[in-house]
Each structure stands twice: as C-alpha cells, then as structure tokens.
Length: 186
Image: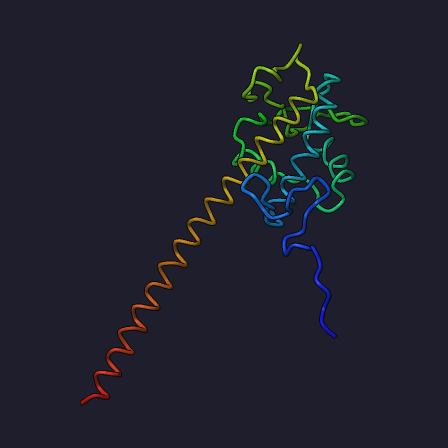
C-alpha cells in the first residue's frame, strides 16, 4: 500500500505560521548556560524585591529564595563571579559587617547591590531608585545576549580549530595516498 501524500512540510510550522527552525535571535543555549541564565533571572527577581523594600541584600538572605525559584541549583559565590564576568556592571559586591537577625554579634557578609546605572536605554531608567519590570526585563535580555555572544565566540573558535584539524587530516591523507600510489607505480 502506497503512503498517502500529506501537506506537512519537513520543518514543523507553529500556530503563528512561522517555522520552528532556529534563527540567530532564538538559539537554544547549552545546558550550563541555560542554568546560569535561570539563576540570574531568579536572583534578579529576588534582589528586586529586597531592593524595592530598601533592605540590605546579602547572599545568605537571597540563597533560599533563589533555590525555591530555581529548584535545581543553589546560588553560590562562583555564580556571582560568573554573572560579573558575563555582565560586569550588573551588581556591586562588597563585604560588610552585618548583624544577622537573631544573633548578638556582627559578621562579615557578602552584600549584593544591583547597579541600576548599567541599563543601556533611557526608557527603563530607574524611577526614584526602584527596580521596575522594564528594567529587570532589559537586564535579563542584556545577560542573555551576552551569553549568546559568548556561545558564538566559543563556537567560532571551536569550528576554526576543527576545520584546521580536518584540513591537516585531509592534506596528510592526500599525501599518504599520493605516496602509496607513486610507490605502487614503480
């Protein structure tokens, strides 16, 4: 029995009529980058709540809330370092002597302060020192685009290295085949 022809194209079409094929603006990130992006999103959400309440934002305060939002990875100092490597102006980190609630003595805590001047457009400029939704969304987009740029950079370096290895392999292979065929003709 012959298969019946269908009108389906090999590339799936979504409900809005566009193909689900990847384009440069909507590429999926590698798993580790996606995880880092989710941690950044969660930290932005939690820190905006604390910042808008004019509370001091410490890593110890933020950790449980971020873990509840993400549910897979606990926020650590290394993640903050990665955030600052990818988006250098997103936060200002300082060590301050802070009295923890319920304790008698103060200890040094890592204090996280969102850098609101890091936004690039005047549309989402902070109004009266508040982190509004437009600012948070813009910061997330800046971070995501920086992750994509980093991914493209590593992809380009890797593809150039792979291409060089292939060229060396094929040129060596051609030399060996030419030498063998020359030896056989003698």
